[in-house]
Length: 171
Image 1 (cartoon, rainbow, N blue to C red):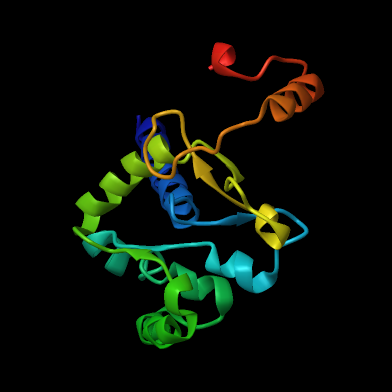
Image 2 (image 1 turned 135 degrees about the vertical axis):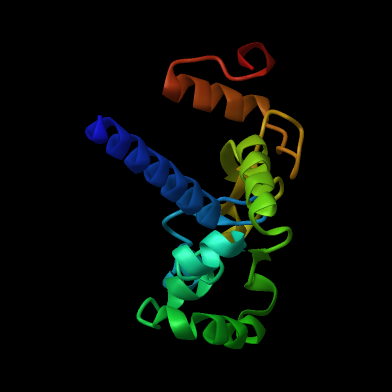
C-alpha cells in the first residue's frame, strides 16, 4: 500500500514541476528564435517570472518567481535571488517579463491561458531581415496574437514538404 501512495505523491510532484517548467518558458508574449537569430542573451530573456504563492516562495525557494534571473546567472543562491531580480529589471527594461498577480490562482489562470494561446510558433506577418528569425506563439482559437495570413505559395510549399494539404480544409 505504501508503494502506491509513494508513487501517487511522486506523480503529483512531477506534474507540478512539469507545469512550472512549462509556464516559465511559455507565454503569448515570449519570442522564440530560429538558430540564425538565437543568442545567449535572447534565449535567456525568453522566459517569464510567475507567482506561485506560499508554495513557490517557501517550498520551491522562489525559483518560480525569480526564473528570469536564473537564466542569466544560475549560481546566485536562492536567498539573494529576489534582490538580484530587482537589480536586473532596470537593465532588461522592456525585455523583462513577469506575471505575478493573484498568487497560486494566477498561476493556474496562466496555465489555462498558455495552453489555449500557445499552440505553435510562426514568424510575424511582414517580418523582414533578422525579424524573420523571431517567432511568436499562435493558436487556432483566435486568442492573443493573430496568426499571419499564409500565402497560397507557402501553403503549397509546406504541404509538399510534409505530404499534406495546408489550408482551411485541414484545420
